[in-house]
Image 1 (cartoon, rainbow, N blue to C red):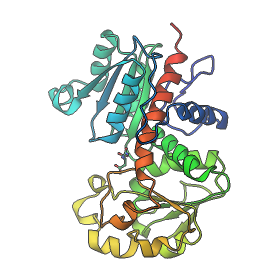
Image 2 (image 1 turned 120 degrees about the vertical axis):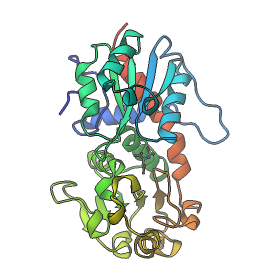
Image 3 (image 1 turned 180 degrees about the horizontal axis):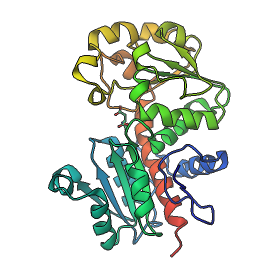
Length: 317
Ligand code: NCD
């Protein structure tokens, strides 16, 4: 695994939550808290990233993650440039590293990267100069660390703590980087129970998600949980033949108000978005009183501000 810290122990890269200590995650969550912005409030701004140049490089589509990284950088005074990689160097055959070296020569200090291929982030992190940080905005099915942090922040905001909670992660677990990062953070924060609910074909193997209870029936898995985290069917990671039929999937695994009634009366419902309404979740739930999906989006900016500030602070001058 890639070393994400500098020699002095400060956080330099954030590619995975795996291997972070609880105190490091607590510090990031505390830090994020400063930037949490409730509806109607003016966002907190700062100057901590003045003079820093951030490049976002996404080879997979993104709305929330990209916009929130950009806003996070700008709110703290950084210059942020978004690169459309599909349109530029990749199609011309230039390797990712050549692009990175070019950007480094243009004095970019932070690279925010989303890529469908496992290992690209660590590869870049191993080759950049010592003053440069690499942040994941989603790596294949493996990790989405800032999403994990914003999910933890959202759970704390609405439920007060993670420790006592029963958390169900539901749906396309097999292909989900969101689920993997959520698992790491909820384990680290000592959730009472993490349940995985998925059709057998979308359930990860026993070598992953150690310690989780596994359910193939939604009704059974939701019984008494405090948090229901829904996942998108990752259509782009299926072959056409293997893609579940939307209506059939909804009939068995779609979260409806009736099914949600199995959970704790004050359970919260989460979804990283984009949502397939009528496939994994009914609109009555997505827009209902137990949904915290919009808080997740707002908290994403706060978390990314904290992460950017943390990695920039450790780099010295
Ligand atoms: C997720 C992603 O891309 O991993 N979206 C996000 O970042 N909020 C989830 C998804 O695509 O299903």
